[in-house]
Length: 580
Ligand SMILES: Nc1ncnc2c1ncn2[C@@H]1O[C@H](COP(=O)(O)OP(=O)(O)O)[C@@H](O)[C@H]1O
Ligand SMILES: C=C(OP(=O)(O)O)C(=O)O
Ligand SMILES: [K+]
Ligand SMILES: [Mg+2]
Figure 1 (cartoon, helix red, strand yellow):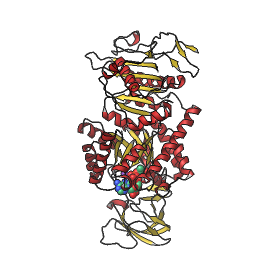
Figure 2: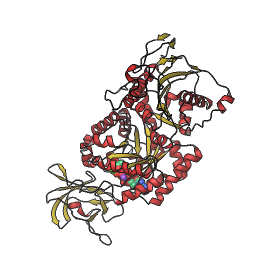
Figure 3: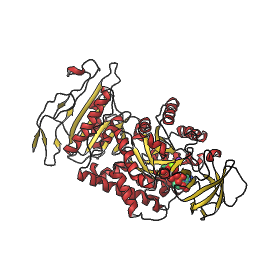
Figure 4: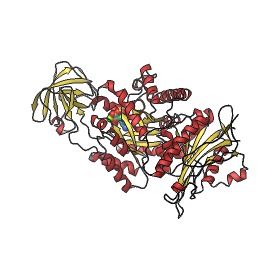
């Protein structure tokens, strides 16, 4: 046993009282807290209306009488999957990496959706490129019904179609082959029936700025053509790289080894996208993922629009899938509520060998700027057809987890694949394995040197979370509890990727649904009051009442809540509670 002395927190004065560490370096009876409207430290007195006081107090949580617990006027909403996970594996065994599934014809029945929810789907993604709004509405309502009736907590994301130049008709229902040397006409004109060797593009300006001699690449390399003649806006092309046209194949043009004719001046959000967004808002979706974002303007525009539109805060995710978006990465990430590394289209725009490093770079910037990031597309592509993944696919999944992505996404594997649930379980198992390895190696870089917050309260919150994450790892606590209104404190903790799970208590349903995407955060709904100490004991008592603690569990409790009293007060604390 070792005596803990001189713990220090921010600008607080520490009072140490006989706190002990056991042989596993877990604290018994130590509590570090601060806060209140009073300010003990002169520096912050008056000026900011709040201060930080810190002390260590003895606090072993004894058991409370049942009557007392029943009188707690709080209902705790825990989703069935997290609760099951916790009971089976304990706090430390809970999965940290979040899972997103694209919903398509293969998994849109209530039964299939329930199986995905049970299998750990945190977010259901609806790609508005496909199917009708009625179909999407039906899926959204089924998910909400499952959440209500069966106690799941699955968030809903819509993904816009975006403006992108692609094939609408290539003369065949599925794929069509382009043979070496064959001559094809690319046009935006509508035509009746099917015309051999004629491909219709979805946008009439698709050939603007394109010259004879340019290279036309299908889906980033599925087939290649040389432009041999320009007839009005139509292009006559010769196949130089034989291959396949898939439905909706993407067109890109290259000159001297560089991409040309980018963007076409098309808006990121088309009229159809706005109608889809309107639809999503009216159905109460949690996330809108914007396709083909090239700079931060459309993100800000959509966020402004949403803020005037509904009180419920729908989060806006920007998809990084163009060359331009890579050039404006930081400003896009800064403006968004989260990012998707959309490797499908990104792989059309940059050489494939650059994808792994670009992915890592995007994840790192997202962590630096504290925004959740999803790694998407082709993670387990072969599982669209086969029941087991390739070894390379498992390695790719593990690498995304090692890079500390917040979430992994299935596309065709769940939407149209034969083995959606199996694919989900591969993601679950592979990520758990890599997370355990990460904990064992203690690879986590603890506190970020990059400082986010500008105002003093923001910087304090950030430092509290950095310190709390470091403490949680060093003390070997089982869980971190945090009380959060908008999810900011929970995300600041998550940013540090601490060893124990972050149990985030919030009163806001929209915050709970948004936190579903964040690494290591288990969001729970609970009535919270202005009395922080009461909130802490209520949450601990309710978790205990549910039988979710094991004896001797140690919890690091973090709070930073501003009260709604006439005089604003901030209560900031880090406490360690051991469950008796
Ligand atoms: N709502 C849907 N209805 C029909 N098919 C869908 C739907 N969503 C996805 N799909 C199918 O799943 C495949 C993979 O999904 P996704 O990656 O989202 O789309 P895409 O391939 O168009 O980028 C799509 O090509 C499409 O065939
Ligand atoms: C996720 C992606 O976008 P979508 O499936 O909408 O093309 C992608 O391109 O990887
Ligand atoms: K899309
Ligand atoms: Mg895409």
